[in-house]
Length: 503
Ligand SMILES: Nc1ncnc2c1ncn2[C@@H]1O[C@H](COP(=O)(O)OP(=O)(O)OP(=O)(O)O)[C@@H](O)[C@H]1O
Ligand SMILES: [Mg+2]
Image 1 (cartoon, rainbow, N blue to C red):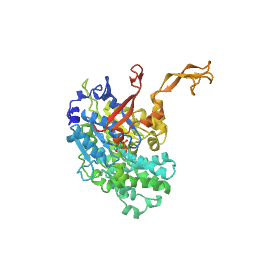
Image 2: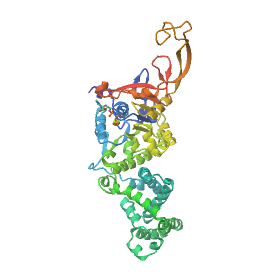
Image 3: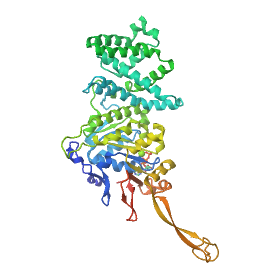
Image 4: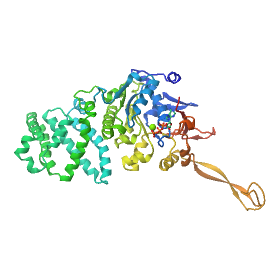
């Protein structure tokens, strides 16, 4: 009851003027806090398993964003996340805005149709659909590259992209609606050898051949330029694809089959493959809280793909938003939220968050440590690029020396004055460790550079639960913003926060 009173709900229909960047979302006292402008520059949270990430900083931020009327896309890794968001929505009076995209929800988001029916058309449709499929495939590619011990991923990526472009083009030339089932049939009936491509038997029994025939007729009617484009596509399916080496073809066909299968079988089929969508990322932009309730923990690859498809389509929907033309008005902030974000992170995220701010896009990513992003993104540059675009960094208790050392370096150093003992070791006095002092014993002052927060201090933060009085400690670093230091004099580039899990 008390919590409910603390959050003044902004209705989903709130005027754009409400979202001024200086609006305070969470008050940290002494004129400090977390504002809409901070939300727009992205948030990441680090902490060991059970360190209090979710019940500490994440809940603190989520309640602030919810109470302010932000729209959300919530990706899920764990089963309990949906229930937890329902509770957070209840606390902030946002239950009416919840859209739980899960099995038996009666909801459908057909992202292929959404792209195909969007204004603009032409080659843009192919590029957009290919980009979405490639983004989903990148998750599978990392897994298979790991199991195959690496390999020339870039080459396979290019070969896959080339196949997908020609694959989406084919029904487009034929004027047939694009569905994943149809795309799968084209690939599985494409010619396997140059000889087969010219055989009457293949032409008679192949979906690929039938659609090539239809596309040829339509392209001829459409004029020379369209026919020249069609010939490129035809050349791919009749010459280039059958001429690929057996190994290359089987890898790209297998990756495609792995990508498509979950979307056209239960439980994703009803959610993604119905002809008409009744929910889309645009709903998030309008203030809905869409929860992709297909957690990776329960649905494994299917869950991951479903979350990734939503994520990428959401990011592109945000980037398409037009800023309000009236001066002094602002877009409703819309949040991409992912706990256990290592399940969903891709290289596009850094690119997205770098430009999302002006489109009202806020990202909140939680994970254990830097290494969990490095494992997925492949190298430190990619991790730095992502984290450089998630400006506010919350650090909960952690035993990862890599992450603790990085956080310590990020917070920086200052000069400290140290007293050191000099001189001999006989006699009695305070200068000697054994209580004795000599006539030449004494002290001198030295100045040294020391980290504001040593790496080891992150290992000792409180992790919530009964043992810690339900308190979770975290340090926050917000892109170099300065906060009052504990001595009241020196300003420091971080703030120490304590969250109560039960309020
Ligand atoms: N409302 C609560 N009241 C009491 N204890 C809680 C509450 N919420 C979480 N806890 C406990 O506090 C500790 C930290 O929980 P929390 O789930 O926030 O950590 P986490 O860092 O998100 O963990 P994980 O990596 O598993 O997601 C856990 O031991 C958990 O059981
Ligand atoms: Mg958690």
